[in-house]
Image 1 (cartoon, one colour):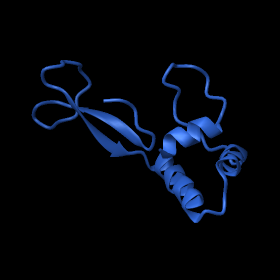
Image 2: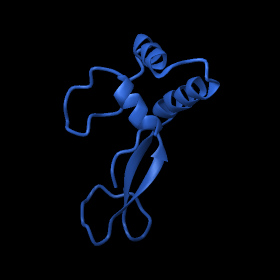
Image 3: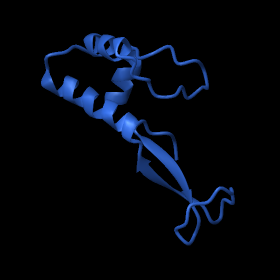
Amino acid sequence: MGECYGYNRIPIDNHGDRTGSVHPRFIRDRLEINESDAEAVRRIFCLFGSGAYTLREIVRVLNDDGVPPPKSRKGGINAGWTVARLSSFLH
C-alpha cells in the first residue's frame, strides 16, 4: 500500500491488533486519518471546488501559509507545493 496524503498507515496483525513487527504473512495496513493533513486536504478541495482559484493560486496560498506538501516518493527534499504536485493530488 502506498502513501496517501491525509492518512497514516497503521500495520495490523492477523488479530486486528496494531503491531510494530514486520511479518508479511500476518500484516495488513489500515488507514487512519491524519487530522493535521486532513485539515489541509479539506482546505485544498474547498479552494479547488469553489472555482474561484486557479491551481497556481492554490499553490501560492498553501506555500504562503506553510502547509506541508505530501512526502516525496523518491525521498527527496520537499520544496513546497507545486502546480504539478497539486494537480497529481487532485486527480
